[in-house]
Amino acid sequence: MKQIKSAWGELAESAQEELEASFWNDSIRMYNIRTPCPNGDCNSIFHYWWMAHAVDVLTDGYIRTGRAFYKERLLLLYEGLLERNGGLWTNNLYDDMEWMALAWLRVYLELGEERFKRAALTLWEDIRNGWNEHCGGGIAWQKTQIDYKNTPANAPAVILAARLYQIFGFEADLQWAQKIYNWQKRTLVDPDSGIVWDGINRNGDKMIDKEWKFTYCQGVFIGAGVELFRATGDRGYLEDAERTAAVAVKELSDSATGVLPAEGGGDGGLFKGIFVRYLADLALVKKSDDLVRLLFMNAKMMWKQGRCGNKVLFGVDWSSANSEIVELSTQLSGVMLLEMAAKLERAGITC
Image (spheres, rainbow, N blue to C red):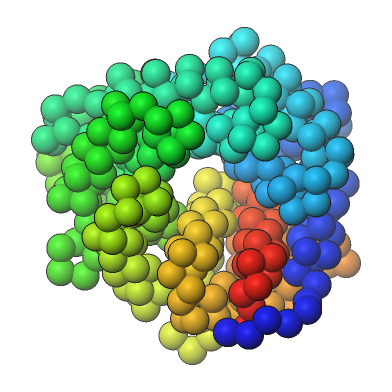
């Protein structure tokens, strides 16, 4: 790794500007779920968890620049989301609520406004109710299917609880983080390889979805290990994260180019963005040349080959521009990748 001057911050800013120009809808104070979206006719479905990642992306921009624009947009998005969700932050899906809580907690740390703290804590209180003893523990995926447990509902909860402990110092939050992590590791992590499986008992048969090896499942388990290492200093958590990162890169990225897989549009469009967010966190803690190389290689590939048309829009494949319609999920993933490259650059890490 070497320290050089580059333009990752500028590229991230250009992607943020495209997000605004192509997706922001002032009439609903939220982002359209795709572009083009004439007259906002694409927004019949409320993609709550996509909007949580939009909050995260705006927070990335604010941290990088300190621009008042990002703060103003976050305030509007807060109002738009609360209105669309009927004046509440909670919903039926525990993983959705975890993403939203993580996002507003980051905003609270940057802006210091109590309403963002309240949003995060209100969500965390509801999320804890998702723990039950079906399948030996774990947080359910949704309130109407309490016996189905998966990585997306558990590893992000670990990240949230560990961060809450670090910020506010309540021992109970650390205990929750460790309890959920221990269930996640013994139930949905391959003890032989470290690869993270998606879920258990989806069809009521106690079977584990071992064939579902999504990038975001690897990413959130990596993030859980990093955050618990930060909270406790226990390097065992960091070693778990490193092991999963190594096998995820080996199994899921292209063996020739290192490009991360296209996992489809819709919800799948967010998977890689989540993966690179937590991979960058690990790279900052561990200073791994291999991880840094992978992140920057994907960012370079996406910028050179993955933009759609003449705009700074990103589709499902970071190595090919192949879509006239771009969904918000894939755009957010592309912005996240560039923001993570800029984050590493600010830390003096590049390649």
